[in-house]
Length: 480
Image (tube, rainbow, N blue to C red):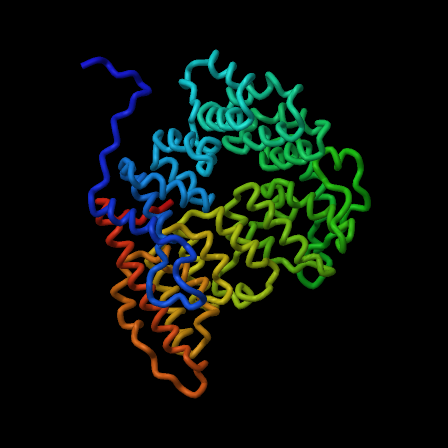
């Protein structure tokens, strides 16, 4: 046959009939069709659609043409579905989108609608100079993922003439593959006309621990934080900056604090957040992150200092510091206000690998129950690792036996329906019975709990069936 060009792709195989029927079922279950408040025992099919789509895309199936209108309607109503729905729908969706105003969004958000061949620099340059804004962003993002230096060079060719809000978006694309070679370009952008561009350039430079800006921030932060050995035990003492000078401002320190914050603590937080975490060992007596975090801090500066270190650990993706700031999940103050808030813990966890994250959250739930765990569960990889899934089910079981109100756990229940590994369905079978009500049980709670557990088991069975219909092998537990 004729030699196929590199751009032509083999056609995708059609969906197995059972999977096509399942897709039609998921799409027919539009939100708002199922009565009011009480969720009952029926699975929430709309919540399973994202999972079905990502499995179908993973297996490389083609979308059945007759499903496209309903699929585009679903994606129109839910922006989170769009990338997976459009990838599954393929080029035919773009053709439909030109015929129906309601589906116009597909033309705007379709990735690679005008993708140039990777090695055609003329085409790339022309698209960069003449393309629509969305096409230019897509081009820069794609190029940055493959050739960071080429993307930066392309950006430099038109930088001086771009509008401020466009410069901000383009600069943001440098987060991907950020490298020390970006430093001269970013350092120059510290004098940009736009305040937001200057701030983003400073933030990106501070995420490069070897940059000159990071070094300047380290020196400023070091002047504010020291270990005092003259006390009973070594203690961190803090002397916040007395002014925010022009050089600090150029390096991204925002001079005016938000309402209710003191200026000096506001400046200190920004310096510590931008200083390379590796610089603290030498400054604080050769201590490890864990030892530094354990030191007492004089004059109520502990919360401020630790919060800034949290932001630095997230910005610099520093796992050693993240672990030190998280501490053990069973620590008594891990469940309470502590020095580090739950929102900060969730961000710190996201710097760790999936297995370690799941272990930490499982330990947290075992020690502190589920009431605070919702945010932390949100950063765990899915399907949940076996230990994490067991911890959630055990905690739900304990809450039910304690006669707690089931509706305060509906958020976690909803997550479990989407994220528990379907193999847990068998363990849950015993929990679907209505428990005996004692006098300290909230009235009617037993029926609610039984219903919620029934819905959970039904949903897990449904998810297992979905996988089988798509011929998807259960994923091996991945260490990443």
